[in-house]
Structures are given as C-alpha cells and as structure tokens.
Length: 251
Ligand SMILES: NC(=O)c1ccc[n+]([C@@H]2O[C@H](COP(=O)([O-])OP(=O)(O)OC[C@H]3O[C@@H](n4cnc5c(N)ncnc54)[C@H](O)[C@@H]3O)[C@@H](O)[C@H]2O)c1
Image (cartoon, rainbow, N blue to C red):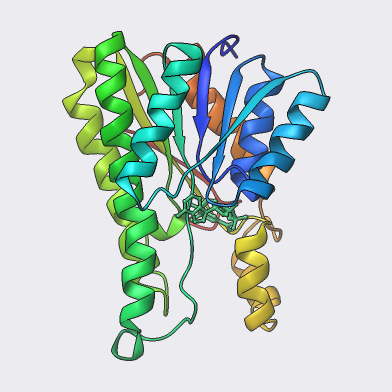
C-alpha cells in the first residue's frame, strides 16, 4: 500500500480505531499528525509510533470547534507544507441509550456536534487546503449505524447516516479536483466506545455477538488496514464509497 511519506492527520487518534489507524499509517512510512481532544492520550499514541521508528506529531483539537480544526490544518501545513490524507475518526456515543421519546437533548446535541458537525468542519478545513495543494484524500469513519437502524441510539444513528451522505456528496463535488473521499462503516469493534456500552449493559455482550455471523467483535487493527488501503494509491478509482467491516452483521 503506497502511503510512504504522505502527511496524514488522524482525529480521535488517542484511542481505539484512531490510534490503530495512526500506527498503521506510520508502519507504512507515512508521517502522522496524531490529533485528539485529550492531549495525554494523543501523546501516548505518538510516543509509541516514535519509539518504533515512525514519525508522529501531536496536535490537540476538539473537532466540534471550527477554530481548533482550522489550527489543526494550519499547524500541520506549517510543519509539513501540506495535508495528503485526513482521517475523520473522532466520535462519541450518547451518555444514555433511550428510545426517541426519552432521548435527552444533551445526548442529541453532543453526539451531533462531534460526529456530524465535527466531520463537516474537518472536511471543510481539509478541503480548502487540498484544493490549494492540488489533491488529497479523506476517509471518514462512519458506522454500521450509518447504514441501518440502531435501537435507542437516535443521534448516533443520525450522525453516522449524515457521515455517509456527506462522504458521497463531497466526493461528487471534488471528483475532478484529484481529491477522493470515502468512508468505512465498522460494525461492533473492540474499543473504549464499546467497553463503555458494555459496562452499562453487560447483558448486551452475548446479544451483540449472537447477531454477528462471525460471532466476534471486529479489531481496531482490522478497521485501520481498510482505512490505509482506501487512502492509498492502491484505490485510485474509488471515491464516494462506504466499505463495511462488520463480520457479516449487515447481511
Ligand atoms: N467501536 C465500535 O464498535 C465502532 C463501531 C462503528 C463505528 N465506530 C466509530 O469509530 C470511531 C472511533 O471510535 P472508537 O471505537 O475507536 O472510540 P474510542 O472512544 O476508543 O476513541 C475515540 C477517540 O476520540 C476522541 N474524541 C472524542 N471526542 C472528541 C472531539 N470532540 N474531538 C477530538 N477527539 C475526540 C476520544 O478522546 C478518543 O480518543 C468513532 O467515530 C466511532 O463512532 C466505532
């Protein structure tokens, strides 16, 4: 997979799928900007990359704040001169799972702000730079919840359907600009996000596994490999697509 010497930003790279993705890019000789809202988590990922002979820099950013996202792009360009690949991975779930009538305004607003508006902000700022430099590549992390119904999880489901729609719309807009935009849709994947869900609802563990044809959760590394592949020169004719990694759940 050809990503060597590419300049890559990964948001939410302090944990789970984002951390695995940052490490995979670094292992393929890309230079990685490890971004997260939590500095110490981002630093941990970056330290691991640098200790293993890769190149990583930390830039703290809250994707729900456009000023933060702008400075993320500006600082990356100041250091490396460009942004080749932007992985919009930062995402959260609701505090409480509930049916729509009981869903809190707080859970609606917070999840939409990070998962949906955050991806818009990151694409907006990255695309301004990518058009200027004559090309680029964006991979958005959506979810199986962006393709099918998700019980008691309305804002998360809405935000991920939006990510799929934004991916397709922006891909169409920039197809002639040497910019490809795709999304991955992971099913249940081992991570802090899933741990949080299972800590509130331990009974869900067996139930979730029972609906996954492969009878196991995905691994963050498995998602990361698909992200690197989509961002690489191996997929030059793919744009506006969603790749589902769910052990067959959507079948
Ligand atoms: N784990 C799963 O089962 C699963 C399934 C489908 C999709 N996803 C998606 O994958 C992405 C990564 O999830 P994960 O499971 O690795 O979660 P995670 O909780 O392990 O990691 C998310 C990271 O994002 C950071 N973050 C949270 N809010 C942020 C903000 N406002 N700005 C910047 N960073 C922020 C967190 O600090 C954390 O490091 C999310 O978009 C999630 O919706 C996860």
